[in-house]
Image 1 (cartoon, helix red, strand yellow):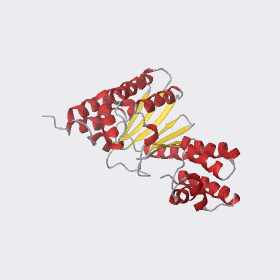
Image 2: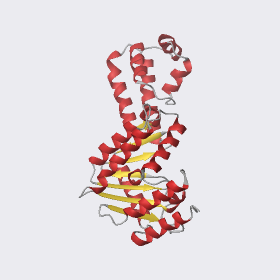
Image 3: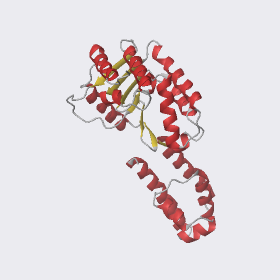
Image 4: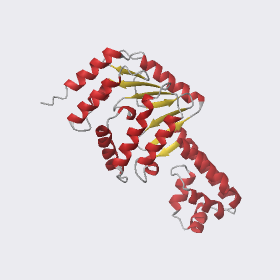
Length: 280
């Protein structure tokens, strides 16, 4: 879990505890008033559990400060806007998140991205995307709206052909060898990736095995203009927009780009990965 996210949750818990103390209540009293387990009150106050909006309304009522329900929920919205759990985002399936991706792409002129273990969604074939959504749905136990999600992801790729946009992506060579779909699907995906090299809106760099790096590429991230960075973890998607964080991710991108190869050299690395699939 992000340290920033945890800090914000601890601060919200401290505010709840402050209101309880001001009301002259102990934890047992609040739990009894709300019909909760005492352990839930403790987890919320210590920042070990994320409250729901209903939890915060109930808390405000229990401590006699209904007027502060808006403030408490505002803190929660701010926390969830930056740190969005996959459980909530995918509660209705993958399509809604893909629609959001289209909106973000439409609002952006330059997207810089780095992926270390997969092909970027903007460059995926329908078959590769289908297997990715199927695996993610099974892993996260979310509704299976696979075909709607695939169609929406492919529709997002229309932006690749719009004059004036720039898509600058770095892909670690290892991602070309991560096979999470049938080998023939991966082969077609690598052909698609090689075919994008040379498109005037796309700058695709492959970071080779054995390249001299100033910093190890630890995880993927996408930078939307200079206004937002989106980072995925197993449980959470982080939308980060403060200047210091954006500058940090820009530096990470720049340092990695120093080791990337482009054009014919990148195409050769993709071809080498395709040859390794052994489709005979």
